[in-house]
Image (tube, rainbow, N blue to C red; front, side, top):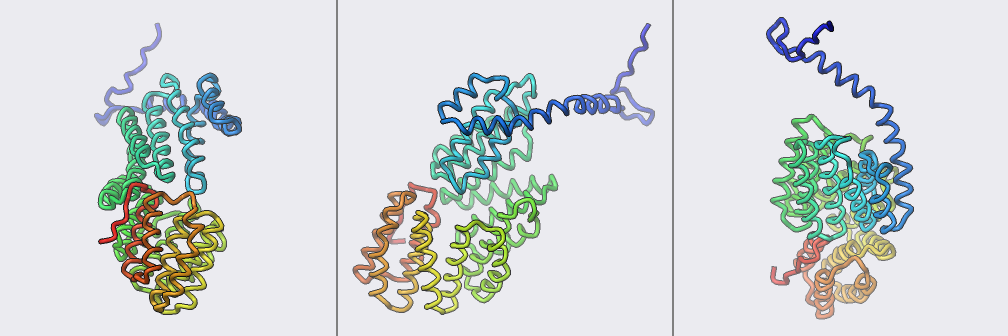
Length: 406
């Protein structure tokens, strides 16, 4: 007669349940699946390459028909990472990749992975698609996708880090919608989760994002304080581009709050990072920042040179929103000088900006108001500041209108 196995939850000598055998069996089960897990991870890279070489319709057909090969959790995770890598440089491509990640996640086998893991993967896939749509200025679709992410999160085990990621993406959407107070509240919830989980880098990233919301709301001193806190927490090796972006924002907040000498010092401390790490477009933004600091320090000739170079580089790259913003800052140089002829020349030079594909009709209407004011010699520094604030907020919100009597 076989010896009966003891109940693993029976009390140990100290009166507490003894889970040792449960833990041992779970550990042995995990070790037994390691080769299978590693094989799936290795295969995911090859599968992603195959999928991304196809057209959109062909990819969808492959996901629907090749059940065994393409319905893996590792492939879903890899596609989400590719969305993250793509959304700022090619938002339309990021949306395509996000749609593909959702398709794969929808077909994950709950019997193989378990309901909690599958619903968590689906929540993240929808969340990444939502953020890609937000970056691509499709705010309504972003809202819908993030709502789906919340639904899947509730169907799973409510993993807190997944929930914090969804909150962070929702905050980005609220920023794009001009709902900065709500963005800050969502980020406060995410920050609390990361802090409790001792996820220091993620907490730092969320603090930097909340600083962005405060910056959009023109609360520059609070934004400066918060971005410094975020910088003290992020891991430079894990996300070097985040360091560059956060330092750039810090210099911007100092500039906009009138601390031009401190901004100049912070910029010089950051210049090496731009040169070693930043993408080429960020070097253009560095030149823009140099022009803004020079303007604040009263060095108008330096400001004009730097801002013209930045504007021309943005136009050459087809970055219409940034070209328009720099043009308004350049206009402020002429307004400060009282140079109406220079202002009118600038307005006449804005044709390529009006032809840019990334400017939505409401933004174009605001720029048309600037051109009319320049021609009528009615441009003021106050008007330029209101327009620049509007463009910063309206970049990803095509429905936001510029109100002249602001």
